[in-house]
Image (cartoon, rainbow, N blue to C red; front, side, top):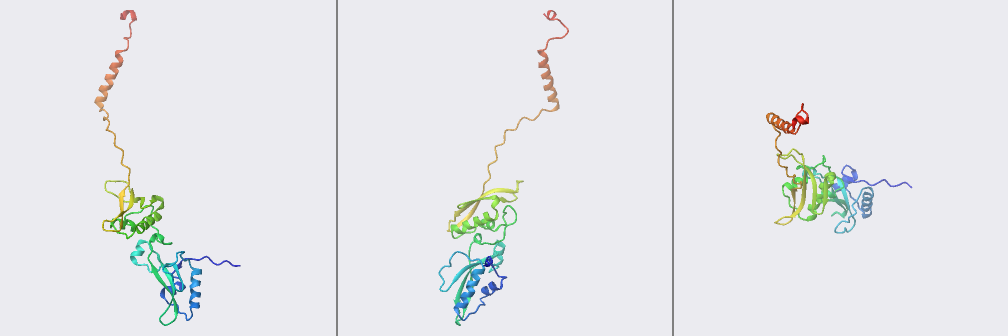
Amino acid sequence: MIAAPPRTYATLRHPTIEALVGGHYRYRELSAARARFDSITAHFICSKDLPEPPAEIAAALLWIKGFAVGESEAQAGYTGHFARMDIIRRPDGLFTLTARKLERPLATHPQRKRAAGKHPNMGHPVMRAIKKRKIYASIEAAQAELDLLHLDFPEVSIPGAGRLYIILYEKRAGSTRPTHKIAIEIEPHPQGGYLLAMRDNEKPAPASASPSAPPPGAFTAKVLLRQKKKRKNLGRPVTGHTPEEQA
């Protein structure tokens, strides 16, 4: 028995998905529409989450590469969107398949643009949102942003519930170091919702020791040397005489 080929993520470049998104399928019989529906779900990867509310005929969740991605979303790292696929009956009595875009946090997308570099900078979408004090409707939405930042920079971040410790690439005045440790935490907004607050997480520099006395100058060094020799010679016996003669 020949094994079925592995399922792949749907993409607009595939004619089957292009027809689905365009709403071009037409069937006189529900069974024919259902056969196409089953063919799509067998060929492409579907989400295990069941659509809500339950469909009257059939429904599935697909992630489609290139589907309904706006310019701002592309800049933020989106490469596609989840879509709900349904079988519906048209006003003319024919059956068709439709795909409706579903908004899901970028962190839950199976494919997205990966951030370049080892450390994030203030140009990263999440960091820009922090700078603009973006308000999130729920803790889950804010947490999804922290999860995304951790996924993009796993080597320099430590995740936690409601917070993220990460190393930021940022040139700062008066500092020669290009990277800085920061902490990002979810905080309630006074007017409702939540925002991400950033603070430095650097250890305080150790207190500098009191400066030692500067080394002596050439003249002072000579004086100190003569004094040292003089003290040494005071305890030395006079040469050229016997002990009796010294008495």
